[in-house]
Image (cartoon, rainbow, N blue to C red; front, side, top):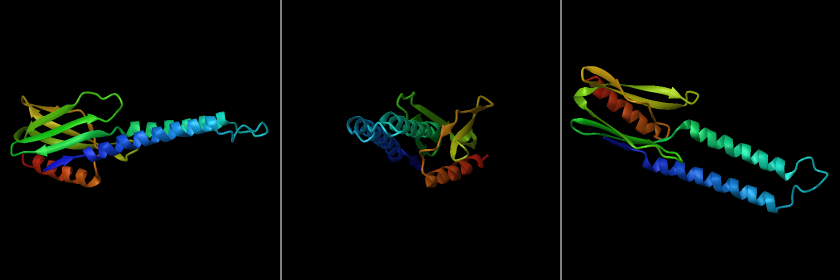
Length: 160
């Protein structure tokens, strides 16, 4: 089975780009339109610019706290392969986990971001000890793919 969320990652990037373009267009329009230049008005264009900036920052922070990852899962006859990296402006290194099925122990799903998003943690039997890999955010993975992933990993963890 193979799970890949590349299309969702493109949507995340496109959403960030569109929100940024809309923000810039609002600020540019605010500078050139004299709608808020009335001296009798209590709301100036600076108040509107601050309000728009706060909305933009909140939307950006929500996207940052969701911590979307590119996620690719593939199970072959003898290996579980997971490739992932965070989707951000300053990309971190790309990671790959390759676990022989005989050494796969278990997996855990950890909730984060107010309990609405999930992180995947996998465990491997390595040199007679249990090795825990860093959590992988599944926030950019579709719900159906998450469920399929859980079913497959449960099947492999119960083989022991």
